[in-house]
Length: 271
Length: 342
Image (cartoon, rainbow over all chains, first blue to last red; front, side, top):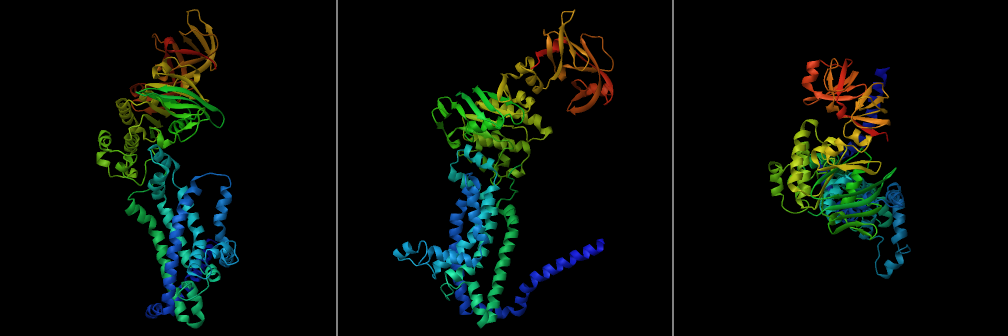
């Protein structure tokens, strides 16, 4: 009986691993490393890579800059309706990306809520690179803000109180105590959000289109190429897997990184 | 020295903590059970919690006044706060911790024997060292008031004695108005010039540790100070003493005068133990069974069914005391204090 259960566990684990690993491995089986580098030189790939890097960098910088202080406020302040606000922040997480694209059109499109004002100012967002930035920021920010709130909530209140009794004004309490102590969690949330932003597809294609060299990001290029030139699609996919793996490994190594080098010793919040 | 003046009311879950207190260049320790509002009180003085009414002032400097709607922020009050568990910044070195509030830490690090640890992180320190860092950090801004929350609670029992003596000397040296809260009467007595007992939101008694030991205001204070408190009924005895028939059976004679329901207060260190009733001036002899023996350094706490005695370990060894043995506990009538039952 015990043997049978052990065999059952082994079998399910093997199936799960095989199912998850096989498709990923298959890409590298189909693409010899030499072809991979060659395909990356392809002009479609190069354009998409540049668009992706540029839009992701801008979107991610905006998310970090605005999201970090906002998460600090949401983590520390207790106010009426806080639960509602936290739910609203998380809502984009459960939306299908296509719905996110439609929502962005409804807000910033020509006929959208802000469309009239933007048009009057001569600003047109849909189907421009700014639209890509907005779409990426929209879908990745909940990942970051949620993780950042958890990171700030994990900081011991007493340490912030201690900083105040030592004469630190709120900005200094944030910069010298809250931020460094939440750094580990913020880094993890940032990496997850970045990965999500780089992979963004649905909202971008609806809100920004797929114009090579302008709004065509790497995921959009995979989609555009897979009917014309399957090998290029494979090569871009392989690139994604490598980038994803690097992000994950960084994430896993981060605690070691943080405790071993930056802070040297264990960060003990309560004892 | 600028005195700290408190007169405030802090709402607690089941009662309001009402306190009126003036602390000059001395250390005042407030002792009370957990939940008495001790930490809330320190937080209110530091500006981290808001009292319901009343005022907090340091000399002419008003930090809080509910009536005048004054409520200065924590960073604008001049307090040095030694938190329970110390709350050192784990990501900063000892020196960075101490100088966090500004100023140079050199003198303090030297005075507190922390120079060799200046670059260490709090996680690498022992309990006693962490306590010294917390005190150095609190003093570095030259505060006008020092607040200490259970400064001894995070220490190992075997380092307590030395650390306590050191803290005592520091408090005398800096001579700031210092408010210390603890649940341990011994710590309070060892560290403070005056000790106050908090219970149910009131200051039951305030005085030197000797005042509190010598004439506790009520049974609660006596119990907190470590006394045996035994209930009984008092009556005049023929020998001019008061005889108290304890609810547990034996009769205790006391020099104090009382009648009716009475609490008998006897300190464990005034009780001696013997195998047989000795023929000496100790008038009270209670034959009783040993429940447990707890060594406390060179002394031992011997718990009997009715009371507890604290005797030297030399005595426990000489008498071969073991749980279950029957011994005679003796104490003088003059060492018994009688308090009305409250």
